[in-house]
Length: 221
Image (cartoon, rainbow, N blue to C red; front, side, top):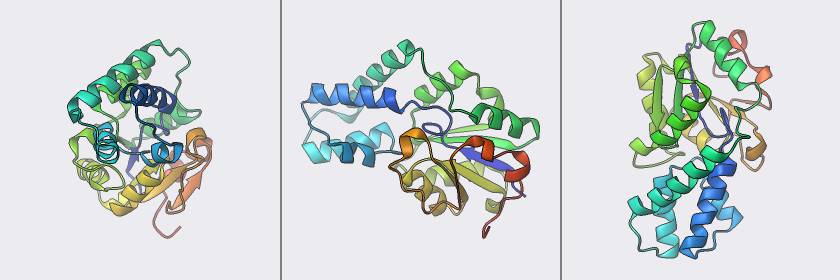
């Protein structure tokens, strides 16, 4: 029986992608680099550090990684704090509360930086539902590297067969499967271009999930 649900954040719990898109592209203008839509979307599921490491390689940027991250983070924070129409994705709060009240352990495993996770969790009062928070900034490689989900599974204290992951990106699904975990692919508004074919189950709305359905999920179904 499933005992732990591991959530991604961006595109699963909250849609901060438009804010990230704004911050990144404002910074791209400052750096005078032209990032194609295809290249930008290939970064989905990557940590900010990994994105800038790749951009430095591609465009020969001399600026230190730390300084690049700080500029983008400041742009993101300013936009996040002034954006009034930022909401949890439809149905996810009900799902989180349903799982929590029925005793399901919830863990966050997000590529986002800890400060970004903290902003989202404080704004929407989510800390009370999650036993552990795992940030991608603590790992040298981003999804699809499975390390972040291996750590989330370790923290759960349960068998891999008792844990599932909810992801919305190609890289996230690959990371979950690489960690040997059952993965639910969520088709969010901003993940239409993502390939979720490797997911064990794909849903288009969170009302397709609840405690009773999730607890009985297993490999091979």
